[in-house]
Amino acid sequence: MSTVPWTGTDRRLLGLRLGAGAAVVVVAWFVASGKPEPAGQIPFAALSVLGGLLGMYGVFAWVARGRRLVGERARFLLGVAPATDVDVASAETLVAGREHAWFHRADCLLAASRQWPSADRTVHQRAGRRPCPACKP
Ligand SMILES: [Zn+2]
Image (tube, rainbow, N blue to C red; front, side):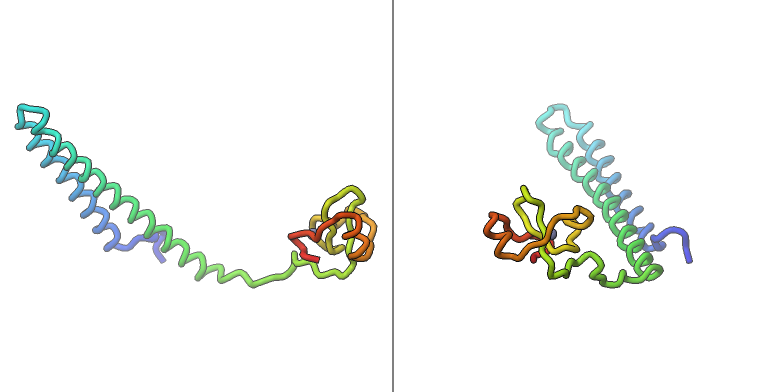
């Protein structure tokens, strides 16, 4: 397996785009240099900008292709991460801090290890607390 993600075709495309962009810049510069008035040079200056953009497109397309190929290789080597529900709270016990606006499931990451007292939902609601949007009790 190659140590670089790009193929020979990718390298040739990069060279072609960079070369075409450079050629446009050089031709525009050459033609503009023969024009005595600035008004005659401006269209060729704009053309040279397009040549530069063509070269930059070649580089960005090359990098994007490399990133995609590296991602494909990483998925091939590492596989897809299994779905997990490790951090999904499911406890039926509802807890809240006395001065807090939310009540949580006891195993919510926002409530774990806080030693908050448990109470019924109606008690929490009467105290003006709302259900935590993370654990959705
Ligand atoms: Zn919560």
